[in-house]
Picture 1 (cartoon, rainbow, N blue to C red):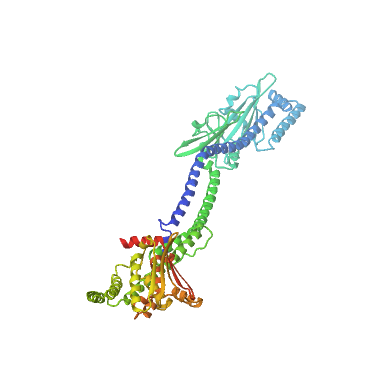
Picture 2: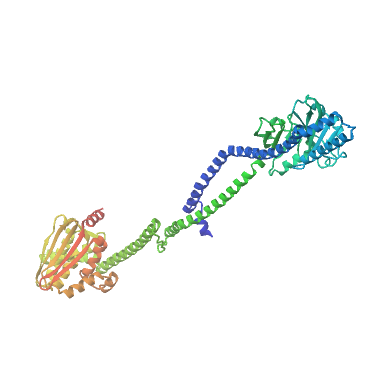
Length: 611
């Protein structure tokens, strides 16, 4: 759990990548949403008004059709020639004395009643009243419903006398006078026209009436949230779902601007969409009213569904993206954990990521770097151990130097006083060798001093053995300044005297040369040499040199017995892998030891020890 928290810590690389990716998606999406809402705001308003107009147009067609049916009935009665002839005759002489004419009058009245009933069979029920000035009337309803004579007492009836020609009077909602529908429809709507003779004199009236409820049913059949009302020219309500509001002034009449238009207004903390259509033939208007929220409800539902789909898709995409980013950054987190473990000192841990991308290459390089560091630590540890054992071997080769040096110096002075210069020189050479052994501050010396050690050593060896060894030295001036570990040439010279020349007379050559960036020191004798088997064994012995084993083996031997292996090991420690030591030998021709020292190593060694 702690490890997971660390991986998703706010400062972790993985967290930053996931966070930045989410921000880069959320911000554009949010900006797009705001811009979309801003750009569609006006479109949404226009769509809301367009929807209101569309619904109102549908309702208007039904309402106009219903009112036109009323007008059609009035027109038919007014314009039908046969019916008008009968009505005119009845209006002039309501009572016929002649039986034959009376019978004809009966047939005419029956035909009028039948015609009235027939023209109202199709479509919605309408109440038709033909009222003649002489009191005679014809209806498609029974007398029990209404006594037509009572229509003369209505306020609007006087308006009929003012009409000209085919003009009509549209009578807005009045209390219902028909008993059978009074309960279901408290109000009624009527249209009235005059009946005129050849002299354009009024001889009667035709009134067509429908229950107001018929108009309201049209409103209810329209699917939608609109509240529809039918208004007269003065904006008083003719038809409304609430009967108590019929006859009253429309509440939002001040928002009615133009014919067949719509607009949005704010009232009582709400926005409303209002639309109106004018009925051309009577001056009435059909109005719809709906809250803006309800008008845009369908569109908002679509938008909400789209938004939900987008939100779900966006969420799924974010989850997938986060998962993929976690998978992609997992190797980086692994490398981070490995680096943290390495920082704490664990150099054995490895990332072991072997992908084919840059992270895989980086991981491989990182693992290889750790492998190389471990190798270098092992090399340095081994090198330090070898150096310590080499120094131990040198110390073990020393034989109480301070005491011997003082005693030898005293002996030399006494011998010199007695005139034995040769013995005094021998003792002097031995003292120099001891002095170089005593001085532990000089781990490296210049080649010139090393040559002097060799000269003293050969001088002493020549005093020990019967046959003399010649030492020929040819050293470049530049090479004299090379700093090398002390007692490097002496063991090689010792091997040449003891093994190469077999302690017999011979010559040992010490030469130097410079080849490119290397100083070459060649030590060569003209002794008995070695065969290939013996030479291979010697080379293998040097390559497999173990300083600890060598120190135990040489514990009781003098400083001159350190051997070629010790020389190689000390030079390798001092100059590194660029140092090379090569041994060549042929039987009967002698042996050659070639030391190749890098110039940079030799020069830096000079500067380091000089300081």
